[in-house]
Structure formats: structure tokens, C-alpha cells
Image (cartoon, rainbow over all chains, first blue to last red; front, side):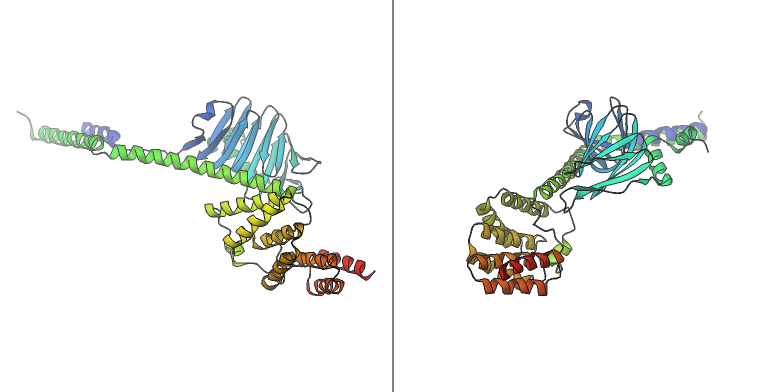
Amino acid sequence: MKTLTRFFFFILAFTLDVRVHAKIVQTPNGCIEQSGYCVMKAEGTKEVFTFGDVVISLKSNSTFVRQSLGQYSLVKGIFLFSSKETLDVETPYGKIAVEPNSKIIFEKKEDRVVLDVIFGKARMNPLGSAQPVDVLEGYENYMTGVDHSLKGRTGIPKPIIIEPTLKTWALLKYSSKDEFLKQFPK
Amino acid sequence: MMSTRVLATMTIAILFVLQAVFIIAQKEYDGSQNVAYENEHLKSLLSEQKAKTEVAYYELDSYKQKVAMALPKDIPTQKYQVRGIASLVRKGRGDLSLLSMDLEFQEIKRDYRNKNYEKAKVEVQRFIHSYPESSYILEAYFLYVNSLYQLSQYEKCVQEINVMVEQYPDSEMTGLSLLLMADIFQKQERYDEAKSIYETIIKNFSYPELKKMAQDRLSVIDI
């Protein structure tokens, strides 16, 4: 009977069609391996991209464009940027310079981009404004569209709310809850 | 001699093998694998197109911000009292015709900004005709009357401002266009009519900046 059961599972294993709906969309095709312009999208699950010293984790259904190494545009979704070097993040509302050794969560919403600086520092340069706005470690701020003064607007810096930020960070940085808990025991 | 138990086991095993062979053969030869492959290919094309569309919207947003920065400060944004039906239903972003409308209107603004008034006039007239229910319609009328004013086509300009007064009597854009009308009357030395327009603006419109502009100009006429 045991043999029969084994045989049954053996046959079953050959006939089952298991599919995992995780996918990276890249356009132009095969551009991830190169260093130039590349649109990248995580479909179905989170993805992690490493370009030299820059690690970008994306939540599912997030899209970004690598304009060149060190220069990225946030199209849609939630991202964790970890970089040992300075890098430029572009948005429709202005540029954000990320300082070396920073870890920053970006959320590109329909009308604004929100950044939570977990480690390091970011400098927002809103469109049309000569005055950059620094976002320091542990703070959150946002950048949005041009107003009547013909300058991009920014919010007021406020301390990041630990729980949701931590959840997003854990989700983007660690592969499982156990791994996160190992790193940060209670 | 084989026992009945062994025979039954062998029969079941043979049945399993036959079933497996049947399933594999079916997959191989009934074309479903090709269809599945094509399906996957189409899905990946669709995903690629979706990503491209997202990037196109990103670029459109960036372009809008640049246009907004380049606009002269005296073109107000939409803070109408009376909203058209189209402005209420325009929220969906998936329609390519909306994208095309957006792009066309940005193009017209660019022409106007570049002082290409003749082209802006023709294009905005066509825009008003093509998209009468667009949420940009008031802005379009405003650009139209301004283009006519810049081209010194005063009679036509006054006619079109009258259309705005009839159709959008409470809009700030209509108020600003009335300032243009008064200006035309001043140029034509029809001071009483100009004065009456300024007084109308002060009396009937609630926008403080507009009232102030009318007040300032009225005081100049009075002098």
C-alpha cells in the first residue's frame, strides 16, 4: 500500500501545474543588466534590484525608471532606497538628492511624493525653488506640484510614525517576518 | 501464481501510468501548450505596455509641472464657482482621448506663452469646438479672448467675452475677461462703458484680487 501511495504522489508531482505569479517587467527588453535607461516594474510581489552600491526594493505594482546609474525616477508605488553613494531621485515635482549611507522610503502618490528618512539625509529641490529643503534622519516630508507662486510645494517636516514605517521597511528589506525578528529581537 | 492483491496493485499502477501518459500527450498535441505560451507572451506584452503607460503619465505630470511654472502669473488656475459637468466626470485617467485632450491643451498654452497668438487662436477655437464639455473649457475661452486681444481683433474679442458672460457668469475667468473688455473700451475711448464694466466687476464678483484690479483701473479712469 505504501508503494502505491508513493507511486500516486510521484505521478501527481508530474501532472501538477504550479505557477508563481511573480514577475519583473523591464522595458526595453533585457535592460536591467545594462547601465542605461530602463523602466522596471515589480508585478505580483516585491522585488529587489542592486545597481553597484545602490539597492532598491519595490513593493508589488511599483514602477521606476533608471535614467542612468545614480539617477532614478519614481513613477508609481513604494520604494526603499539604500545607497552607499550620493544619488539623485527625480519626481515630477523636483529632484531629491540622497546622501551617502542613507536608507529612505519613498512613496510616489498621484499628486505628491512622500519620503521617510530612516537613516541618513535627503535634500529636496522643489521645482522653481532656489531653497532646498533637508529631510533629516527620523523625519518625513513631501513634495508636490507647483502652486500660484510658480514653485513646487513641500510639506512641514514631521517625525516619522514608527509602526507603519517599520512595517513597510520590514516588508521591503526582509524576506520574512522571522528574518526581521532575528535582526530586531523584541 | 500471482495473488489477486498483486494483480490489483499492478492494474491500478498501469491505470495511473496510462492517465499520466494521456495527460502529457494531451498537453503536447492538443495545441493548448501553444495557446498557453501565446497567452503568456500576450500577458507579458500587456504588462510592458502598462509600465510604458505609467511612464507616459509620469512624463505628462512632469510636463504639466513645467507648463505650470512657465505660465504667466495672471492666468489663474481653475477655482470656478460654476463647474461644468465635464469637470465632475473627468477624473478617470485611463482614457487615451483624455490624455490627447490634455496634451492638446498644453500645446495651446505653450503657443500662447511663446506669443504665437495666431496659432493659439486657431487651435484654441478648434479645441472649444472639439471638447465643449472639457474641464479646460473656461481656460480655453480665456486663452481665446486673450489671443484675440493680443492680435488686436477687438470686436471679435468683445463678442466672445459676451459669450463667456452668458455661459459662465460667475467664473473668475469671465471677470478677468471683462477687464480685457473694459481695456478695449478704454483704448477706443469709450470711457463710460469701460467704467460701467469695472463697476459691474466690483459689484458682482466675489474674488478680492479681481475686485482690486477693477478698483485700481476705475480710479485711473476717474482721474
